[in-house]
Length: 272
Image 1 (cartoon, rainbow, N blue to C red):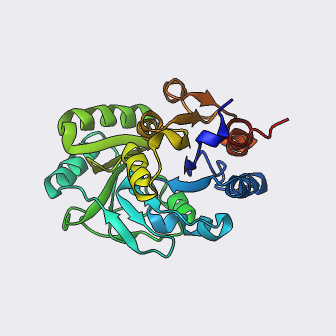
Image 2: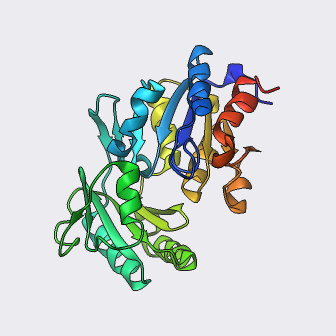
């Protein structure tokens, strides 16, 4: 068990971690965050979602810390003030779209507050719009304007294709961009410094807390960089084996109160 006196901040992924598969924030998870606050432990969120896609959680959890959207590509304050933004170079964004389409994936672009797509009937569009409470803009060419792009996403239900595309994107861009799967069916391409490991660094500086006093919890390959930078890491029970292997502890799945149980057992020490 972790000595909770050494944990000053918990940084949590959202989908597959804080919320269930059906995107529900349970009462037990809300109560766990309240107990963290009572214990003097701060709480922060990071996600591949746009920051506005986490707005529904701000009041429910009474957040007072920066929110890291686009895997750390955009930091906003709880009042939506932009604190820091990291965008994808135009040539990298263009090549990302080519690479994604070359692997047979659908391509999305997030730029500013806009989510740009070319096919409203493509996989996961309807569910994503419901999840993040943001309607996409259907355009003829998502490559027409690639200035200020926060994230390019490759989407497919052929999970092996997504995995191969991830490997090829990493090989193509090297240190020029970050390419990770935020879900088995999503490949996120972001700024080279926009990853969840950098989120730990940012919050450490912003809140004046040692990274060793930050605990992280997540379920996907995009969460592994923050595992490596934080003092303590927890993988969800629904995480793939390669993610669990990178964490210091493993909890139950997001559909079995895994987040709340992790806070109770590993951070608060209140599990019976």
